[in-house]
Amino acid sequence: MRIILATWVKCVIREAAKSVKDRNPVRRQLIVGGTNCDAAPIATPRAALMQTKGMNYIIRPLTTEDESFLWEMLYQALHVPEGQIATPREVIHLPELARYVQDWGHEDDCGFLASDAATDHPIGAVWLRLLMGGNKGYGFVDDNTPELSIAVLPEYRGQGIGTQLLAQLFSSECGVSPVSLSVSVGNSAVRLYERFSFSVISESAGSLTMKRG
Image 1 (cartoon, one colour):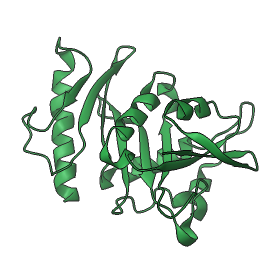
Image 2 (image 1 turned 120 degrees about the horizontal axis):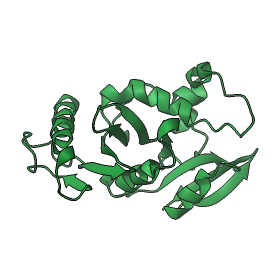
Image 3 (image 1 turned 90 degrees about the horizontal axis):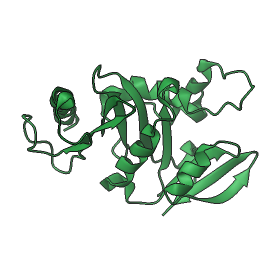
């Protein structure tokens, strides 16, 4: 099933890239049957072709082949207050961080990736993973609530890509259930999360635990 999905996603990306020069509305939903691709697996989320500041980008479901990029996104998701030295990349391999992406493709894993439509290079991602028992994450609420992670490459921030990634996630089936996250108190992303109906449920050691639903 995952191999079929990965193949379909690649086809959708290829077809979407061909339509970049179209004069139709810039934001189009590529629905199953609306491209030259074979039919997608049942209940596969849609891929969306979007535009911001002259750049076209595609948001499509994550696959197991995206794990290497998720490691980069995990690093980019680490909040570094202004004026402080960047965190060494090696920290993402610590168990308490690696658990968010390692062996991506578990049954309950779900998320979306944004890529430049012209180059197919990934530029951002949002994902959910259920972390429970002895594998609890920083935003743990209970064993039934997955935790959210999101990041966009630095050169693409401030263009609304993170907002659209969240919108895509919460309009999909995997975004219907309650979701939690952990965010630093001084992180400006708090306002973005509040726009998506997250609210603070606890605060500890400079971090907020927020929950939606």
